[in-house]
Image (cartoon, rainbow, N blue to C red; front, side, top):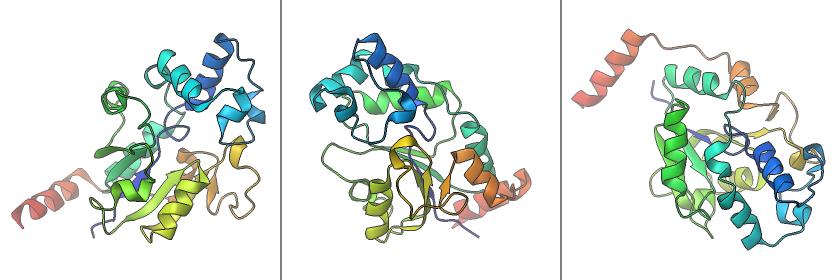
Length: 212
């Protein structure tokens, strides 16, 4: 049975973005509050800088290049891939002029399974960026920003939304831990009790698809 693809956010789901940015902000002398106190997704407010300065900090500090992998994320994605799921990474990194090349390089460097990478252009929502390529939508969307999940759901392009627990989304009571909120990508995948498709079966399915 063919699955709908799974949409996966990168920053703070697969990539340790927030902590890496926090270190960069400290180095730049911005005196950021503790990471645990980042109560809003609008980091410009927390760092007391404008959007242009915020993007400049990320680019100048090479946050997208140096950030490590979230613990357990690689294994979780490998498990989903082995069970026959197509993995579509959708990231709002359109502010960075070299976002696609840097992100692809990072994924390859760390051996992260990815069937397609979509960098959302500035001014577009995630569903707007993927609607033409994935008109049937996704089985799951995993993100740390509730607006991305809400936009995809409102567009009728996802069957189930999953929020990764972070300081900036703690106040959202409609997301319940272990139901549609999880500590990490790894704990979500663990909750699915994914059955890994044997390699021989995967080959048969791939050959059958090519024969169509």
